[in-house]
Image (cartoon, rainbow, N blue to C red; front, side, top):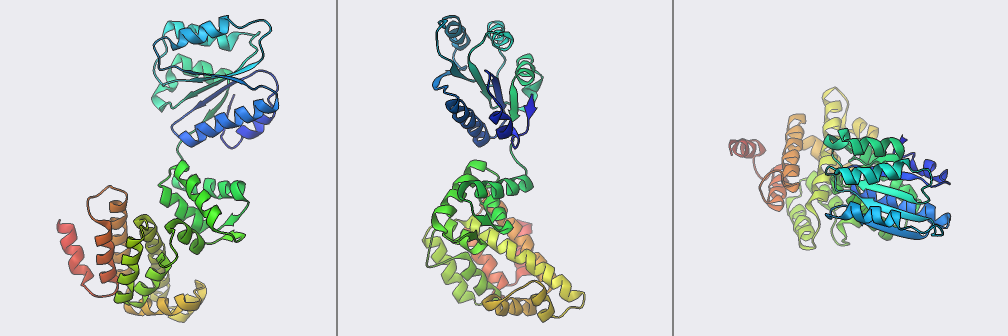
Length: 348
């Protein structure tokens, strides 16, 4: 029976008799955690004897078959983990697999794991396992799915609520890698003591610094204070902050400024828009300044520049991300002509 990753824990809780489990896909964290859940469940059923077989070896299936044939009548129930390599299984291996699946007297639990690609789902051995076992596909998540997974994970890990913006930050920070996202959440949980984790908390925790943070940089840029912005930026670089966090925070701010500017173009006043978007405190003054300095077209152009920066951060385009952030800072603070630079950029 195939179940979703979200329903697997509920199905596993019902397991009493000896069973087959089949975990496949390209997402390593989910594959690993599914195995861990089986181990934990079987331990509660007093199944503590565990054997592992890596099927990359030439005689791996023969060794597994010999182990099954040699089992004593009085041997204890075992968990046997079989790590498949996603390649075709020969006749001998297929015969052993069919024996495991069809044996009504089998006393052991089996976990089969394979980092299989979709092209292998048509193989006979794959169909046999998927139909006979409690099967879970562990696939890579799309961006929206990853954001939801991060929110649920945070609640499970440390019982704290986190803003949606924090989930989006962690998803972007880890580039969809769930292991990276889990590690980022662990870091946040160790550093942030409050009940609710805000975006400022997460940025501070992930940038791992006390003297400089991305919020200080954004405030300086919005005010057009280039000397202050460049000091903060170089301070962030000096303490080893990750550019992905800076670019993410800038992109989020610019997206909101574009929405605010669109409202102003439609006829709303700056003060009305600031109230509507709930901008308070020091950020209110900085926001007023940039909305008076930059037109909607200029803000949209800055957002496009940040998309360009993001491709450099993620290695899709060559360039020095720190240099590009400094150039962006000069553009937003009106130190250089953004339109002229953009023209030269796209010529290249």
